[in-house]
Amino acid sequence: MVVVTGAEFAAIGAGIAIAGGAIGTGMAQSGIGSAGLGLIAEKPDSMGIVLLFLVLPETLLIFGFVVSILIMLTFGII
Image (cartoon, rainbow, N blue to C red; front, side, top):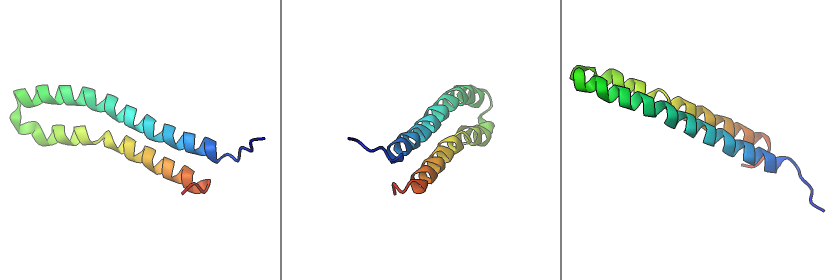
């Protein structure tokens, strides 16, 4: 007989939190990167703004990481 304590589901949920953040970040950065490259080709002095907009979606991945850590701490995985 297998006893399921919930920690297994918590580990899967933590993985989904990281994966969702990574996929969302990749989708956002793909559009921002192509549009930003076009803007830099026309106005080279706007490099700082484009770099800022390219880095902003990384917060999605950081939030996913924090959520996964909180899930794992709650269920005693780490």
